[in-house]
Length: 115
Length: 111
Image 1 (cartoon, rainbow over the protein chains, first blue to last red):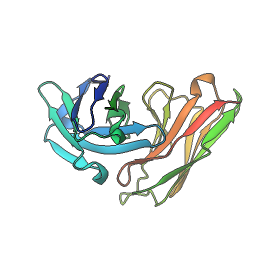
Image 2 (image 1 turned 90 degrees about the vertical axis):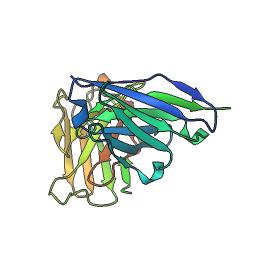
Image 3 (image 1 turned 45 degrees about the horizontal axis):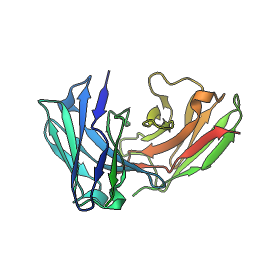
């Protein structure tokens, strides 16, 4: 069965960068898009963008261009999202998601940005 | 971006009642290929969202048949025929016809 295992919670300083990982099992990792979603209380769910691991093709929500960068390592079936120049607005839970219609979700990674 | 508006924001129900949640989009969700990419999710406290319904009315694997989806164009509805305790949480609609967007959520809670 499809499973997505994300890295643990991060506490970061403003201005720093953070890299979140998402290890996929149970399907052919290289062939399917991995989506990234942000969730903040009071702001709902936002689609950040997606990566196709086999080719490295990416699509970004305009709002997150320059903020998020996606990479993927097909040898370890792991996708990554780096968030740069962190501010308090980046404090959120971040999910990796796979499957048509966002069928399979990771458990989420809490990123807290605080001085 | 396509704005997804859910109503109500909060829905108090008694166990065994029927519940209905509305989702309206700011643009038609009919894709050029004829499909309508409107989906529903349930997020329980402390958990990730889980897919319930895809493409308006198709139940995802393992979803009980008390959940049903309907609608077309810009107006969609999720119905739960007999609410059980395990159904409580926040329901989101989303669309993938255009750049992915989500509704703000409807909290289903005990009356």
